[in-house]
Amino acid sequence: MTLPENGEEAQRAADRRGALRTDEPVTGGPVPRVWRAIGPGVITGAADDDPSGIATYSIAGAQFGTALLWTALLTWPLMAAVQNMCARIGMVTGRGLMGALRRKIPRPVLVAVAGALFAANTINVGSDLAGMGDAAGLLTGFRSNAWVVLFGVLIAFATVRLRYVVLANALKWLALVLFAYVIDAIIVGPDWRAVLHDTVVPSLPHGGEMWGMLVAILGTTISPYLFFWQASQEVEEEKSKGRRRVADRVGATTQDIRVRRLDVGAGTLFSNLVMYFIILATAITLHRHGLTHPETSRDVAAALTPLAGRFAALLYTIGLVGTGALAIPTLAGSAAYAFAEIFGWPQGIDEIYPRARAFYFAFVVSITLGVALDFLGVKPVKALYLTAVLNGLLAPFLLIGVLVVASDRTLMAGQPSSRLSRAFVLATTVAMFGAAIGMFVF
Image 1: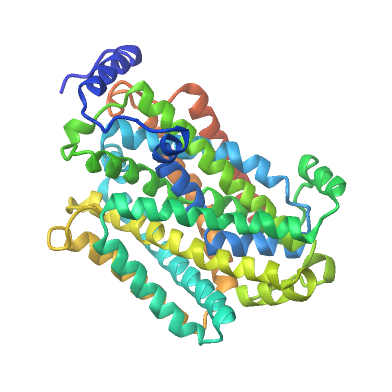
Image 2: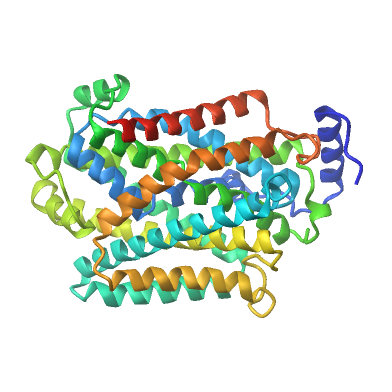
């Protein structure tokens, strides 16, 4: 394939290819059109608020009150820039993130990255399942371990058996459960004047514990597994439209890029809004009453009951179950995509099991090990917080690779990320390195 000489020529060529494509026409009223425009960006943004994120934000509110509310304003543009860049890589190269990184980074390095991603994601899956089990046990009175097994089996079965379009639509609906946390904070009734002050006037971290929390917030919000999932879902979107070959997927039209930018912007805004209200809800309930070190999701929900009422606690637990069901396919799937692209396995949620055995095997093994972790007595909130810190340490190194790929004109088919986008992602990388250094220094 001959690449255009510059970005403008590449964009015109991509637009010409787009004019020849036979996508389903956009019809119907504004609501159906908006629903069809919602895609990997909103799903990825919502998956970011998984039980790991909820636990991390709950601990942040419980330990430090409203002092870290300002981080939601910081992480939104940074997260949006990173996810947009990963989306562009998938749309323009026609490959997932690891497939693009293979062309710039030696395989042994990528195998090590994929191994670290798999380990962190599996711990996260186990912790998420434990959080879901705790929540379901609190709601029903049945043992949480039984719920962990049931949730693991159902999620693995649904991901292996369902087509991508069906699974994507289900994940869109699950994203709505996150509104529970916004409602929770409003029910409690905070002092909005004090809240506004702490939102717009940052409290600089002091001491190793607060620096560690900042690393955890950055790590669970700008998390490596989301980079891989975002890019791979762009490929899945193309495959679902019949573009099975890489050559058919290379290049993105102006309209494709514009729609995805809005999709990612909405998804990351939604994600960070939920983060803000989780910190706020736990700050004005748990922190205010001296409950600063919850150890399980059940502890958080139980503490909310006398302080904010049964309805608030119910919303918190329902949110945990819904977000876990949304995030676990993303966690296990991102590592499976990474290994598949390194070793050239047939991959994709639309692939039938006999054709993509290795891909689905990696997916199922991650969930199986996650279920096993629950029987080892690991405390979910501590494990969730630990994975957030690990992600915060791994992410900036991975972002360097993302920047290298997104800046390569040849690899990006003459459509590299803009200078502004690269500046934002570079700022994200520097911020995450700075937070990690601060944690170790203090």
